[in-house]
Image 1 (cartoon, protein in one colour):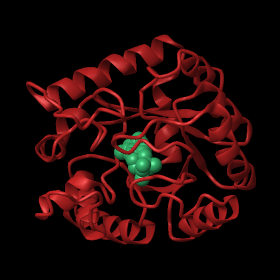
Image 2 (cartoon, helix red, strand yellow; image 1 turned 45 degrees about the horizontal axis):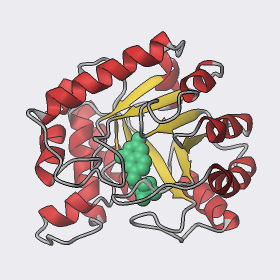
Image 3 (cartoon, rainbow, N blue to C red; image 1 turned 180 degrees about the horizontal axis):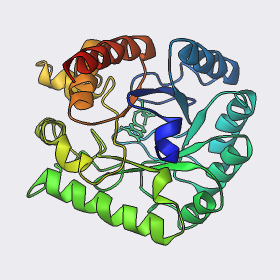
Length: 273
Ligand code: HH2
């Protein structure tokens, strides 16, 4: 079993703790450090394997925040969660460095080490794991008519290239997981195609993380063309089907529901095997 598989065995739920005023589904809810800390501890009690703490929204259209602002939001939360497995959701090397010093065990970078040239070195010099995610363009513009010839093969080629980049930078392959980036520069159809053909991403040989929880494509595929979020049950269904297709880590806001569904899915799988 590799380092990341020990930290996040199949299936693992990663609870989302957004210390932001503007995240798409829970913006402002946990902006106060104590609220975020209480939420994170509650998620661990509900069965999360790790909590993902982020101080910058990546929702479609968002502009990003300054280093000082992001540090001020996440550092007090990370320090208080010293006894909990924490992932730091950032693209900034300096934020990751502070997060790792405060005990974070994973860096979740939605730019897959493209955003800050120093981030790969910060991860390589630590014992931390890293999640490399696919995104087309940047959050500000990514949902402006995203286009692919074949979304699955392009996302796969991108992740393969970023995996090579990370290992060349000195990050042990055993510490890396991959994420096709549901909703990051993708139409409803692109997201569905990626989920339906997830085995092609799993074939890269690294653990695969899926973050579909509450995302707008779920609301849109249920018929609301203007939806900005999606219902919990639809996200749980996607997580279970992605689990069946080989994904192992599930980034979710509603931890209890995901843990319950994935525990049942796992029990069924064990009987069948
Ligand atoms: N989705 C979001 C943020 N970070 N990281 C990974 N690896 N995969 C994802 O799918 C992913 C992610 C967006 O969700 P959320 O954090 O709830 O919203 P916001 O970016 O607006 O804070």
